[in-house]
Image (tube, rainbow over all chains, first blue to last red; front, side):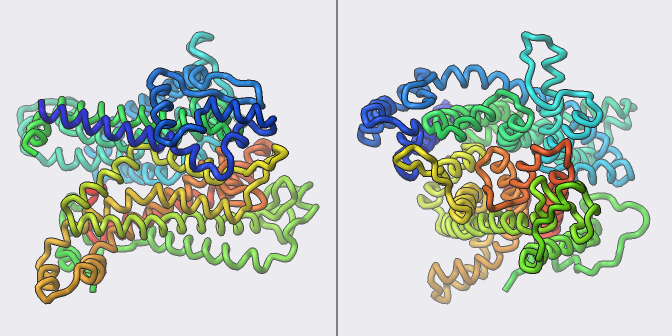
Length: 319
Length: 320
């Protein structure tokens, strides 16, 4: 119980600092952020926007107001010119599900492909199959996801015309179209992830396959397939979880870039427009939403650890 | 002096090649083999050297950077004297790639240098002194790592390299030099906590050794022990991560270019060449594929060499 309490306090501290960092971004803008956000406007209009953003308050009070707004879902305004504005929360509410769908698609592809490849590679370790898989994985890690995205959209999209290379069809407009519009971006994101997952699973499983209980299982005459999938894979689940925790950050970064290449209207596209239009209030909110989401995912990974492996729970209780 | 870990001593670098049958993994035999630079490593070094030389020499010697003939004949090996063809503005691609290599290398190496100095110093201090200072620094790194690295980089760059706005509301673009500096600083800040964590973890191990105790017993100051006794032993780990870091920073610059916050015209980087070339992907794919190949080979070489260094100095992967 004390451990849980300490974790909660840690989480709150991290969230406070992360939100504080996102909030401070606007203070780092060289020159007057209000002029940058609104552009050409009368002094009265500038003063009004400055007041609305809250920039005329003392720094810490600004943060307090901003945090209060953030928690209550007021993420500021997207300004277009001196008078036009729209709520940032609306934009995020539309973009976030698209991004999450794309990331989920990429994750599913990763797991479905990486686990069998990792098992095969470990089981056949040292053979030609293993060497081919490992070398391909090593090469895939060196291929930036945006570069792969461009190559794929050229060959599969433009030359072969199999899949659309830009645009997004919502799930409500048909499942097949929706999946088709996300396939190329998801594959571009998944390839590097597959390589990372597969490499760690392989080295993990090679060690597991040396264990006595595997020999025991073999001598009992359990089919190889069952030994690999049931007995040998289970201890590696923690490794897979670690990789997931480490790689989700890279996946978020990749998604932001790849969305812009395929014109997917997700958080990455929203971020692009925010930067392009110098919407620093919107930038603050987008960064804060992504960072908070990332922190929460990592907490979820940590909790899953303790659920999967009681030894960790006990070790932490002692520490 | 570098103190080699026992396994390095036990397995000399020029060990005989292994027998025909594949040895079981995780034996001294395999490790000896993995410690050699190998053909891949040599190819990697050659490629990186080639890129570095091209980046320095080609922009100095090329006389005809633009050629109208390049506009008509698109693609590689069409116009003599321009083996890699031209871009949509008739610029020689070989020159563009060399210039791009310059920016990409400056940004990536500069960022990792910033990260090495900042992260290395802080990590060394945290791991050497331990206690409260360690807790404070480690929590700072953890907070920086709590934001996805690429998002952190995007946020920093887009804020710091923002075009200033004149009183008339007209954006005044930031100069290429300032943009490069911002990229170096932003990506340097992003890489700092990672390098600091590696340095700290290794410092923790080495600072407990007898020779450190001996140096302190002789009355060496903390600063001297850190720099002369601990640092040389931690350097291989920092170096192997730095090689990987250069690759990551180079790719990150490419991603930033696609978001429009990387290197801008008139400057070019491999990332910005890819980002700009995207517009003419259908008519002139070579403009995009050439920088992609350069980027891929460079990252591949850096990753490979990073692995070689790591295997050679027995850097614990668990601290990653």
